[in-house]
Image 1 (cartoon, rainbow, N blue to C red):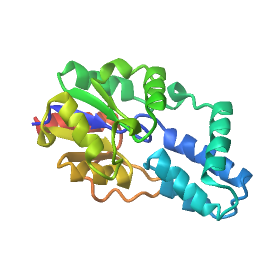
Image 2: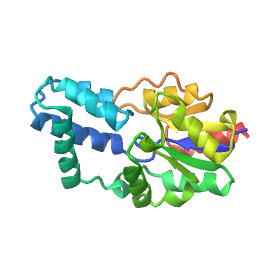
Image 3: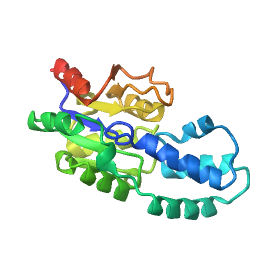
Image 4: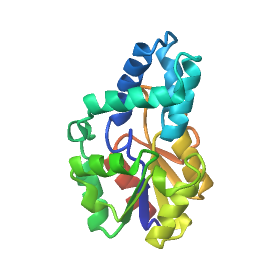
Length: 215
């Protein structure tokens, strides 16, 4: 029986991965990157530390990681993401249904805490989540299972009674390593390998249907 749903944020609750990728490509082009856009897809689902490491490596010495971080921070500040606008249809209603049915909810993201809190607030769903686990709350980010195991512990629910709602291979692997059932939101734009997920869902409502089927 599933007693808790532990959900990633980016690419699951909102179309932020597409928005972030546009920002990443723009930043990299301005810094002199001439490689294919598809090489940047490697940052999807990773922590900011790993994201900047990959970006710095692809820039092949054109800038240092600290220079990249300063440039990126200024770019993000000047081009903020409107999370309300990119919230996936039905997400608010689907998670409200889970919340009202007694399912415990946690948002488990590799993004910084401030970004996660702001995004959930703008999407008007922050109050639905009992716990928020971010990059600052763990020592080992996804694909390590620590993020999901810490969320389960905070909720007081055993891993086998938790379902993970993810999209990226990194996140799916983290959920499986935590011993949890993983439902992946089907993604085709970045051609991510979601084969390790237990089931695929087209949207949040189909994820809810899968959870209810487990009862």
